[in-house]
Length: 146
Image (cartoon, rainbow, N blue to C red; front, top):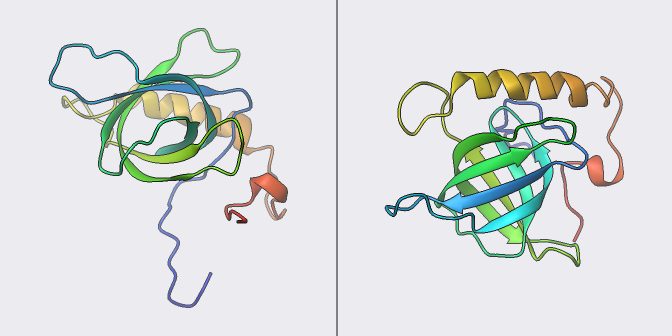
């Protein structure tokens, strides 16, 4: 990271092996169907999520996400906005997408506070696997090699 580069993330990102996400774009039509289902989650935090997809999702697109975690009976739902989309290095999925979650609260377009509690519990369960002071290696690094 250069001298002028600032790390803007304030939340710990962590991986949940086998987690998937279904997403749909915000629409004026009632209950639109999910655009794509069972997209692999690359990482998640209290503030957002990164996942793989076959379809282009443009930045500034409002989305609703249904996140499924192995071993959990019920998926949880999050609302957010696409911040970036980029080609994926993998062969199975063409793109990766970064979504920033909306604020937590009780208003219409906010995420329910109990979903933050859920993510915090998942963070404790999965983020502890990377011990403090150890440098991540390979696919656990924050940078991508092109």
